Image (cartoon, rainbow, N blue to C red; front, side, top):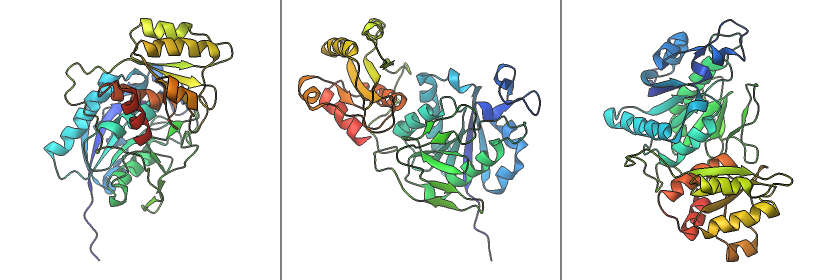
Length: 338
């Protein structure tokens, strides 16, 4: 029996814990302050098993902590991903190594903006690659397997960690230290990267995603996105932070409201005023699940409901929406479609 040819997978490095060398085998939490951050080819050299499942094309991009990433860095990454397939059409999948702190934000931005029709997988690790019981190696192998699998086509951008395949739109980091940190609390995983090498997909996201989106960041000369701030609701919250955000130039405000997505009375007055002055207001929730816009608000305000996007994801869609339009009805359509 002839074995099928191995897929050709590009691995783009951006840094994060998966690329950080700890000082010793038990340095599981303080390594970030001292660590050397490996370039992607150096990381791959630590785990030669990766090259047994695909022909690997390592691509150096950046080597930083994910908490240092900014929207301009997201745009640079989109540009790099798009260029990979332009330069080499034989690439069958792309993996991006990434720190876990902001991984879900980068993943969702890519989910809305990349213009490639091959699988794109974001992978990280909770433990550095050179410590006891690291999850870096197997996460990397599984990410490459998923990126090279025909079963993973058409699913948008995915996050692969701890043997699980998650949709970038819905996944979130839930635990500070545990390897099982990434979950999709209300909808569940897309599938598994199983130990026998099988990529098992059980569902797909029905929401619109890359490459079939209206968001094209390739022409952004400044690489800046409209400023959108997140404001939390809590007992006794007033409008002071909302007014500060507007004064700082925010074109949008996402409210992480009391479940199922309601600001306090004090915040509401400030939000209405901001909205009347052209600031986009998006209502999300501190809890998991679909936020609800009251019927009266649909008629009397320009508020937009975030559906089931968490506040961080709602911010990303709001920023991209504002690059296309400031029309409330159009932005409501986008939140319903994406």
